[in-house]
Amino acid sequence: MTLPLLGPLSLAGFEHPWYFLFLLPVLALIGVYIVVQLARQRRMLRFANMELLESVAPKRATKTRHLPAILLVLSLVLFTIAMAGPTNDVRIPRNRAVVMLVIDVSQSMRATDVPPSRLAAAQEAAKQFADQLTPGINLGLVAYAGTATVLVAPTINRASTKAAIDKLQLADRTATGEGIFTALQAIATIGAVIGGGDEPPPARIVLLSDGKETVPSNPDNPKGAYTAARTAKDQGVPISTISFGTPYGYVEINDQRQPVPVDDETLKKIAELSGGTSYNASSLEQLKQVYSTLQEQIGYETTKGDASVGWLRLGSLLLALSALAALLLNRRLPG
Image (cartoon, rainbow, N blue to C red; front, side):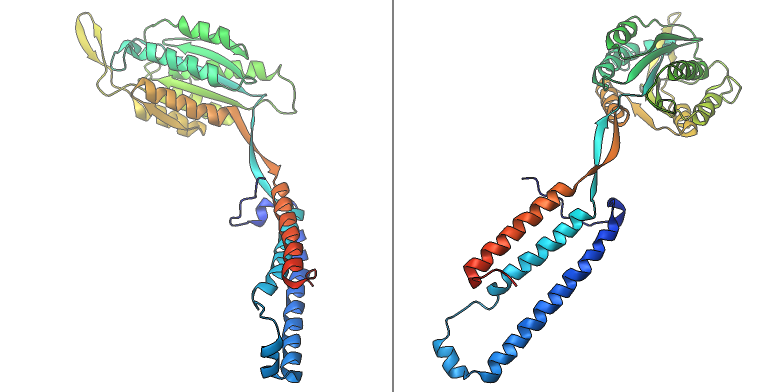
């Protein structure tokens, strides 16, 4: 039997808190019980010869004889809590949502500071994310470097998404803003055809990158990353950013080592402007952990569920114990 959590209660967690008014009769019952017990004790002291009473009366545990009444009161309290409609948080899989996975494929993703390379590690973790994501969610894929392309429109077909992830190709420059705008367009398109509600389906962009935007150079330009992030917020699409790599990454260009340190600040700003959350990962395992965290956040929604059954069961148990204790200790039912 699953017992309810006996912790601090808040009226906000009950559907019918006015039922707690039934505790007033319970308090009145406690008061009547105390008055009756005191009156009974006074009558015994008034008319009884105490020396004779002590010699002939059976030894009774004066405390345990109140146990049935205590259990009865507790059961009534638990029944009142159950009637008030306690609720708890229930996590259920989302079946009507859109997630766009936006991956940076600029040349800096060739860096091997995350073995075997940033891109190869990103591909492996992204495929794991696709496998773990709740099956009913529509997952799409955008790759961007100097331009952005929708490689897979939002779909529940994970095989096509993973196949496209395997085929990611490196290219020059980094147009983060265009990648976000392209993802927003894909979300708007699928939102127009997904039914099941009066409002567009909830959507999220998961953006993985390792460096600053280079096209345009100013992220506040009309096509810049910060402008795109503000647009995402206006459309109710938060962006979860993942800055992937280390400060020591580099690539070989014309036999010269070119440093490509990971840029956390730009991605943090994008997440902040969009109302999303920023993450960073400097290894494949950390990246997988970030994706697992995102899967838990995106793949499920929390709703209020009925939690009264446990209180009813516990109340019934205490009521039965009260009756049993009354018969064993007092040879009658509590009252």
